[in-house]
Every structure is written in C-alpha cells, then in structure tokens.
Length: 263
Image (tube, rainbow, N blue to C red):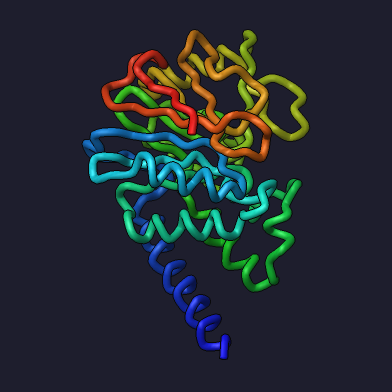
C-alpha cells in the first residue's frame, strides 16, 4: 500500500532534477542578481536541515535573495533531506534562491572524505546527484562584492569565470581554496587544498573590481581577513561553531557594510 506513495516521491524528484538542470544551464558559472533588495549569505550547511529551514523562516521574502555558499551534504546527519529541501526551494524560487557549488558537490571531479552522503546512495542515485550538483554555479557577483565557496580563480575579469571548467585548476581554487593572511600568492602545502596568500587575494580582487569576498569552507579562520575585505561564515552545527549568516542591503565597500547575525 506504500508503493504508490514511494513511486510518486521518486517521480517528483526526477521532475525537479529536470527543472533544476534547465535553471542551472541558464545561470551558467556566474550569477548576477538584478536589484534583489537584500542578499542573505549562508555558509556551509553540511546536512544541517534545521539551519536551512531556519534561514527560510527568518529571512526569506519577496525582497530577499538567499545565497547558499555550497557544501550542503556530508558530515551532518540529514544530508539528503537538506540538499533535497534546497533543490525544491530552487525550483519554487529560481531567481531568489542561489545555490553555489562547494567542494562537497564536486565529487564528480575529485574524490575526498568524509562522504557519508555519497556513500549512502545507490549507484543510480549517486550518478544522478553528482551530475546535477556538479552543474551548480561557481560564483555570485553583486555591486562591490563577490561570493564563492572557498577561494578566488586566477582570472582578470568576471567574464572569464564563465569559461572555467569543472575539475580544472581554477575550479579547485574556487571550491577547495584556503586563504592565509600572509604575504604571497599561491603557497605550498595544504593537503590538496590550494593555499592562497594576501598578494593573490588583493590582485584578483583588483582585477575583478570587487571590494569584498564572502565565502565559507574554512572553519578555523577568523571571520574577517585582509583588512576586513574577506568574510568567512558558517551556518552548520557540524563543526560545533555558532551558525551565522551575512546580510547585504546596500553597495558593499567593506565588511562594515555587512550585517553578521547568528541563527
């Protein structure tokens, strides 16, 4: 007696995937919202369904664009529920829910751990999710700010971001890149995570004409780096830290123009 309900749920998800694939193809690698009114940036949620739901309940309205900075799965206990919830919201509000790609969405291009979500899937579902999530955009541009999951690509214009291919060097810098508040460009070490220094940050931000980068990915760095031009936030309980979001309502010249709030 439960079979028809189960099949109906599977059918709905398949249809949603088709809609989302069409939306993502239209978005491309770089999303640039038109006059959103307010942007709310959400860091890694990592299977924290409660955090994602709280964000929508507290902040979502017709004047707000929610920008999720990647890493929706793994670590947390409700990865599948969390990513499905966000994908369904994307279908319902394609222009006001932005889902950027994090390293945990890029398993199609690079193996890593922990991967409790990916390991829980059947081969067919795994293929379906990895193809869909690897198509998420890499960055968002709005007024004086840019948002990515991790680092910045080695490009000299925003237009070049559209040409970045998944799995390449610039993709790794965006999804896996760590920032270090020391002099230098691309630093050594990092266990496969590109290590990027202050000189690199300043040069790319100058070339892109941006004042502030909003990102997530690194749980153990200060909220503000590089004279408060780089803001790192987390919105998951998976790391044992407070869950934060960043709000932007006016042109951003520094992190002082952002409001950081705890959920």
